[in-house]
Length: 360
Image 1 (cartoon, rainbow, N blue to C red):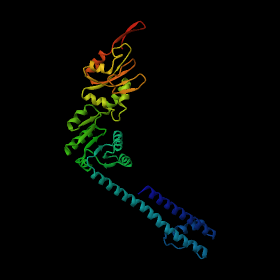
Image 2 (tube, rainbow, N blue to C red):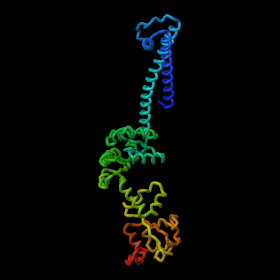
Image 3 (cartoon, rainbow, N blue to C red):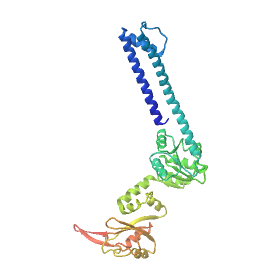
Image 4 (cartoon, rainbow, N blue to C red):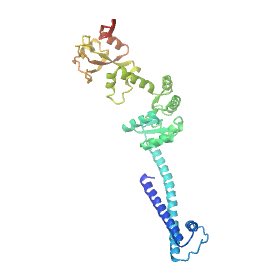
């Protein structure tokens, strides 16, 4: 039932109850005013309202008492009909609405094609669903928890209650017509079973699976997952970047959805790093083009961070470096240390009598 209609019906029921209570109170007061005892007056009102057919407690022989009794009969029967009918209406309309809503949702899933199936609506599932919704991407959420599904439905998402491990649940979600499946359940075993089942039902399906333990990654790949996401690894690398490479992280955060870029680059042997430029060091005074030529094009200069925090993305080859700059480069894991060694120099300083070497 729509909230607006339900609110009107509830107000109507409250009004009827108030009017009936007022009529009962007035009737009791009238009987007492005509010399009846209070308990007799209340008893008379009760048997009149419910029409049990008992005899009158005392003779109703005056015009006023007869008028009050008749008004009480009409008022009570009418009120009881409205109250009972209202409650029945609320129950029936609620059931009908839920049935229609379930039919609408099921029909909506049957009409999907090339959509995404999201298995699990926990913390990761909520974030993923929000991103898909903002991108206007069609998807259906599968979960077994009623509260989670109610929350998803309140956001306007298509939902399906069931265990995504079961083949029947995936078929009802349209796995044969789906383009992508994302399994983001907390248990690695569930994600492996879902991947196996989904791959068997749709060989062309693109499957992205979540893994809590790094050892599960190979199992998911063997089970048919195209990509595996390890939240713990990504989170740890992001924290390390924030601590050790703040300028690189600032550059990455400018583009939405590139939080896991370093992790993805690591799979193909690449990484991002930065070289500090200090006065008198080999990098000081050189241009971006000089550095790229000197490295035989074995790396790519992505950006230059100036001392004031300004980030120059894809700098011109003629851009000259100065003291305090940081050069952000992309290259192979093995090449970047050699690059850093070539373009940095060691300076000797003394601190409390002890000689220390630092990179210039």
